[in-house]
Length: 232
Image (cartoon, rainbow, N blue to C red):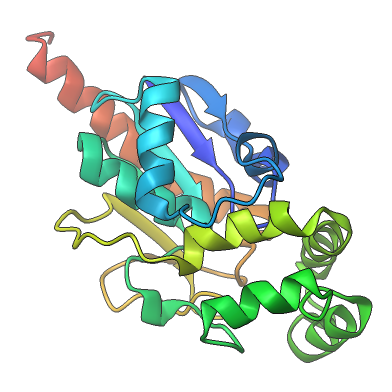
């Protein structure tokens, strides 16, 4: 069973480092910073990117896609295309779950270009407001700092996966949702989810609580696959 891991906005595959060794199967890690590049891609949206990933990585219904945050949103579109099982960690299927101080996407992109969205003042405020004395403060700081120093178009290309509409109504649902009630970046889903402690970065701060339900899910998937092949 092949597992494809898609990180969240501003993250890289290391976000899965605390859970990946506990999950069985061949592992493939995707990295936005390498895949999207710094050339402006105004047409980019989650559906288009999902189509590119399906073709580039040969994703089929036999694969399992595990996505954190934006990665789970992209996984949702991959499932729409190939009907593979997906696991969403701190992610969403409804855009109204995404917490954003600015709603107009064109304004957001403009702020990023001008250095008004990711800068030390904003970072210090968010850390003081939402992450003060929390074990996730370090990983949030790390992600935010990279967003502030990388090429703005690399950042905007990732943001397009969140804010540019996919122009299609999806009828599929994630096979497993894992979410923390205290997540202040992506609100807890209205649908059933395995609730874990922590916040948006529970897979980093409470890895066992996150990987345990995934292990169980993968075991169930393996049993289904063996049954489909007629194996005892």
